[in-house]
Image 1 (tube, rainbow, N blue to C red):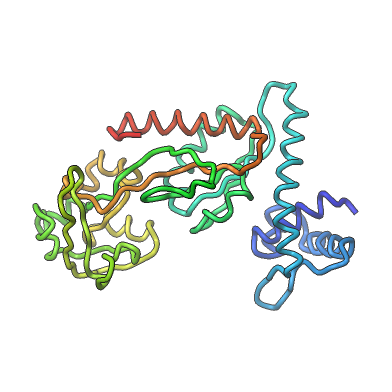
Image 2 (cartoon, rainbow, N blue to C red):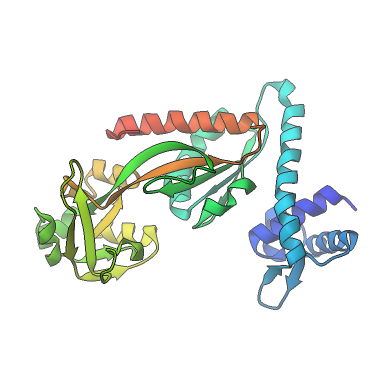
Length: 310
């Protein structure tokens, strides 16, 4: 049995959510993938995956094994990269974790430029809405924090940005442009559930002054669309469905083009910071260091072009 191959296949089955999906990702037949995982379980003398007709679930032994396995495979990849360092060209796989929004709007637009610099480094990008608890499993994990971050996590801030109120020119032409927070009560709200003001119904939006120590203002607005999907609310705002509170960083291209208009520029919903969190392993692979350097350069260039503060 090729134990290393079996270990990689087992990890991929879990990451892809099934044997068939893992087989497609690895370009293997489902039968081979199933056999490799079965061989691994036989070698270990325990079942790692509880198979049902509807889904896969890790056994207790499987959870413990996978946690250690990820670190081992990372170290193997690191060793291979070190061995290939004599070529002076970065190689190997960089394992990255991000939320769906950051993956689509922050990372994906930067992939082409990264690949031009380091064509032999494969970016393996995983998606998780709540990545904070998986930092040790990946080379770089992107997290979004509003106030601060867990001091036990090794993380570097990339950029801070505001949640702003915005709408399309077409919507404003039909419904008018609010000049004060109170005037928002006459406008349709495209709402994330977590934007609810504390202790109030989901119809109430809380804004705070951008500068100074003024008091926050809460406005009750009619909700026309509610979704946990940034893409859905973003698209609806572009199409003129209502007023949305969105990340200024992520919608900056549409603000620049005029497809969206920032409303009430002296008021914000809140401020968030994007962090690049690193595992606590002492040895940081060269490709990870290169990726971090690339990110900071890219963010600084984009922020300067859009008039944002890093």
